[in-house]
Image (spheres, rainbow, N blue to C red):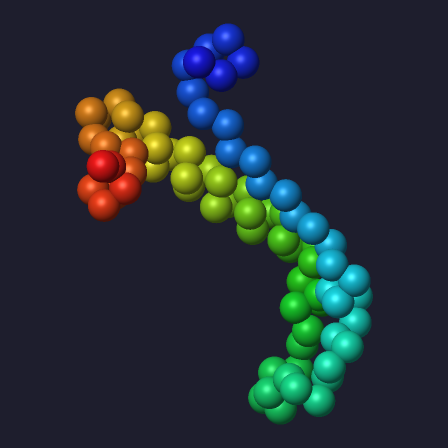
Length: 76
């Protein structure tokens, strides 16, 4: 039981590291990569929402169909 109802809680935190603002080591970036990961910060939350929606759909499908939620190697 979670929050007085059946289910699970997934905690997902997007931490805005200072390195996302500016690459402190630009000389180490491959020359064919013209962008920095921090340039995409505004897409992190929507991208993670898609991943969380997919995780939810997979878990609900597996539960609804009596399938295990974890891989066999984790069930010991």
